[in-house]
Length: 92
Image (cartoon, rainbow, N blue to C red; front, top):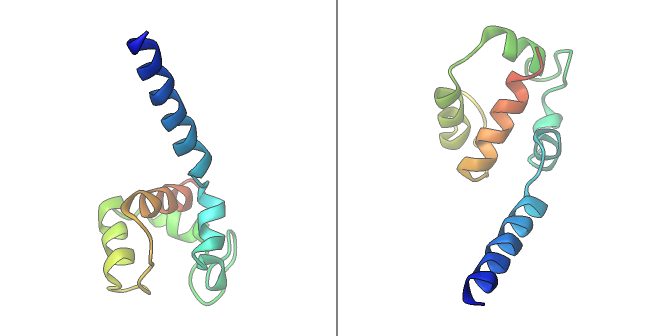
């Protein structure tokens, strides 16, 4: 019975985590990325397609966003930044 209870707790925690996860598009909107960028045309900053075409290093891009070096600092967790960068890089 204990193992069944533990399994139920783990399943609930995974479901709650999945429910709180945002897609890259949702994060881009909620973190105000879309104020300066668009998917396919230059706005204040380059389009996501242009960024993806340059194929920047994912870790370096996350560091830029996190530290605010060469880009506005983005207030987001490491997981959110990774999701954002993966979303941008998928816009080829």
